Image (cartoon, rainbow, N blue to C red; front, top):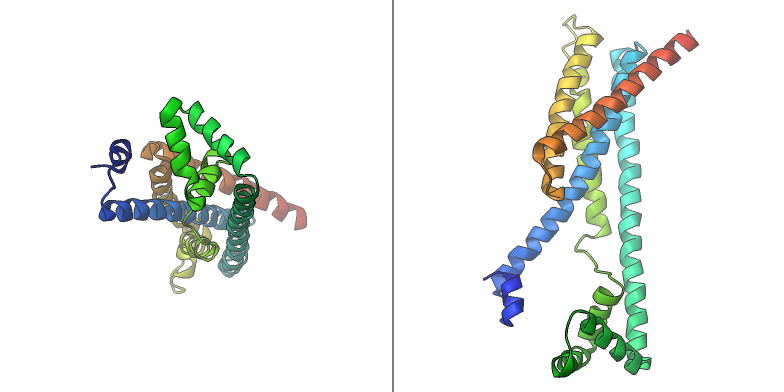
Length: 253
């Protein structure tokens, strides 16, 4: 029996079903963080590689710029994600404390708000009053209901440290892909930077395809569309960087 059916019938859902549903939510949320970090990592690093290629820079310079971008931009992005998630949780806790104060000091006003909320959902008469009595009988349930129904605020399972960690790791792992052909090139080979850039394009397209597919899982959209969107964004960023690099190279030489 699904959780929704259990709620409709009033039965308690099996514990295993609750755990599996919770795990699904958590995994889904962190997939979003992985996609967020991985997409930005691959696109920005590939843009650095494309800009260096457009400026006809050497292999060592491409690697140095790419790795520096990975570390600095990846750290910056993860820190931003950390503070964003922390601010969201702090804001939730602040409003939750306010609701507790209102329930304790303005109980009739808060009780009326519960009545109005469920009256708008179609409850009426004796059933409405019974719902109000049940909810307001438990202060924690009362506050949780006000948070969700009145303020439309629900705290997620994600923690600031985990979101920052997943973002940083995905940025580094996926963002390193455009550099692989430059890092692992055999120095004894006579491969030119143009050929290395071609390999980088292929590898990056493959990485962005995986990220795009994962993004489609999160957004529940068509996988092909998700892949094409992600690759297109990476291609546009690289194209712009390539021509900017070429223009700047002609200006400074």
